[in-house]
Length: 380
Image 1 (spheres, helix red, strand yellow):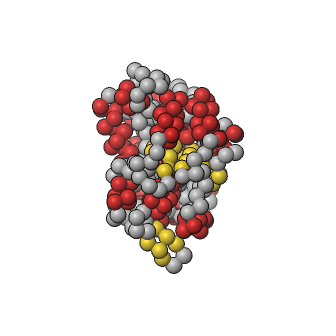
Image 2: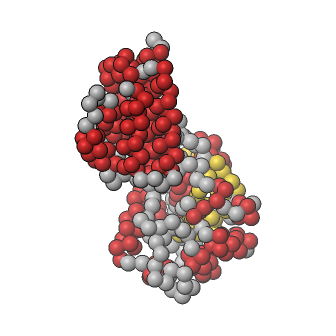
Image 3: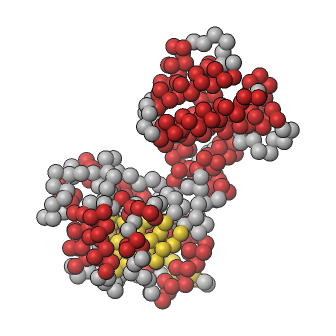
């Protein structure tokens, strides 16, 4: 990773390029914005540049060499001047002050953490989450405070990166606040969050807050073309549903979004046959929803809604510029002629209601089955 590989965020990169040569980093930064817009990537590049033994000076900016001992240690997660803090699964003694919080975790969990953290460092836009982890506990903050109280084994600035800082419990945030109130001049904190409201105002007031806006569809499309063998239609679908997050775009590509859309439409065809084959409909819904989480289920609803909107556009307008699912144009044409009627808008209301049901933890399989039956009642 280098400064040039951080996608967009030009104003933020220029800001740090101005201050890095002068070594005037603040005690604490809060990088906020949706997941997958470069918060971790920027924090990592600042750390590499500030820690590099042989920084490269170019016209207008400075960057790490990428090959010195410090750069290599950072990339291999072995640099003692960098500490990462993030949610951990509960362990037998996770809230005790004695010993490391990692001693309460199984070897399997520790291996998972090390593997995912290294993957995150090598590609900062990949998703980072540990199974069963949802909170940063006070025991982790206590251990952090102890580590910071020790003298550095290496010269230079020490860095602490808190991933999803809003996942600190209230007592953990209060304990962390004490650390911010007694700052060391040679330590910089990076608090990364998609939920600024999840952090105490007293913590935010002691951080320099920097907003990372969503990436443009074109930014995401350019990256996807480099990394995946996708058609332009597939890229168009992914960028539409990524909502400015490259991390989300990667997830959608891995989930094969186009295939999921096709399955949603196939089930719709079964639901709209004159003679309803309930067993077949139920079987297809079960197969579609097996193993998907709430987030992907809601994305599937959006895919169906997008396809149906395209059918409505074809039925009511001669313009094709707004069509997202252009690769399925023939099927859209046939559907629009047969099913787009005056009461068609009610279908979108039903999809919206189903989205709320999934958000409210109603069983996904039942939501989807009822959705198709409701659409059948409306359109037939």
